[in-house]
Length: 306
Image (cartoon, rainbow, N blue to C red; front, side, top):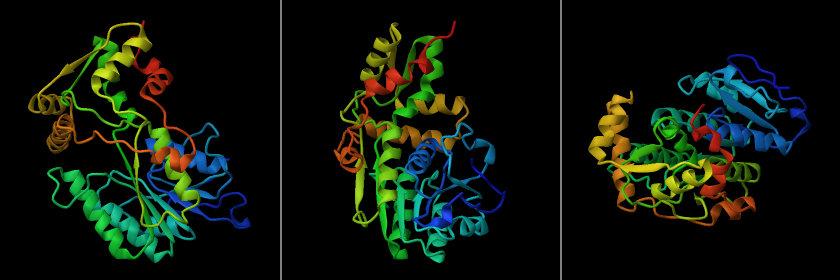
């Protein structure tokens, strides 16, 4: 059973019996939900910071976890959530002011290790604003003196769900990545790597791990795997970055987000994401999932209805 109290952290059954408390922010997101589940399944004291209590899983997968209801923009709730935590797994939309507030709260509350999900290409002079944001956050983290570990995933396979409606309705999807390749990784493997580091952070301080799948793939490969799994032809339609940006705006994305996405897709077309590593296996002891395994597991999400 998960217990909670709005505006502050709650006590986990048996949490005062010892052990290292791990705080997970962004806990109801794609990576965080599974990370909390994995940590709770190990019987580790874990606290999930959530903004909306209704989004916490109700299926028992977080059994034994605490819930801390809070907001990245409210320092008091961050301090309440971090109080008594030894390790903090920082997952968020990477708004600098918000992540910096979490880092500062961790320092105030005596957190001993912080694990951050970041971007492999984060530099202060990146042409992509979100990568500059990550670089700014990382610089603040280094200046804080808090021991930390960085986890940098390649493209997440779960991002394919964004084009699932088009695939179901039209049998095709459009991207502006050309023939670029990427080390696409299943978010479940990112969660497993994050949980492994958070559960035993000793030895990981100052390290950056690159999290990828076992192979470099492109969107033509994605179309081929979907065709195999669904038993119908799925086509990958190539767009120019400008045209893709226009379509994203038309679909409701803010102009700034669409422009940033288009920048990233253009870089992928030039080989920016064509990198892979063995770090998932090194951290988790298991090989990362293949694109075929992901598509097979989630085929129904892409299957035409009726």
